[in-house]
Image (cartoon, rainbow, N blue to C red; front, side, top):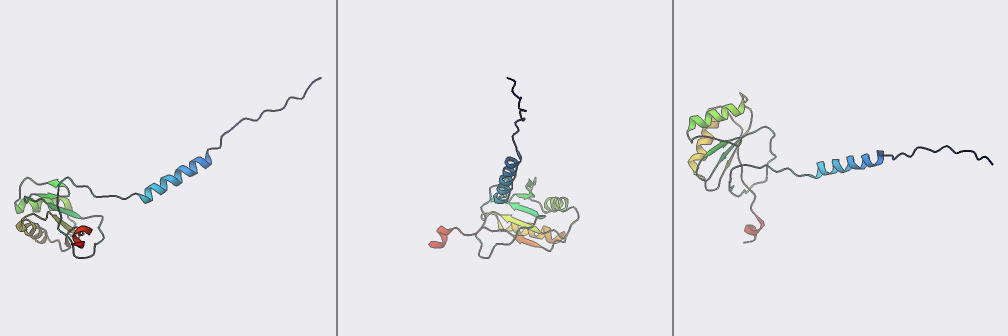
Length: 143
């Protein structure tokens, strides 16, 4: 007796649904991730009494440590002289005077260092200046 041979189908695994799920997970994690600004300098910011302001994408960030040392866009300066600070701001701005200048001073930083940073920005023609603070913690509000 001769049996008719059945044709065997090639077995395939359909990866399309798996790829769809992987892309959905990728999109979910990209959307739900929070980004934080990391700095190399330890700065204890003073507490804020106003509402937070949206951060700009292109800013000149001047950080001032507790001992009065300057850093422009996370690049530490060699000294605290006004001319050095002005040169660093000019290099960071690349002739864009409309960029906002953000000063992040430690709560223990000398006031003269903050005034020097404000003077340098003003002398170079920057008009949009902001000073960053931190929100008060819940513990200090309950006291």
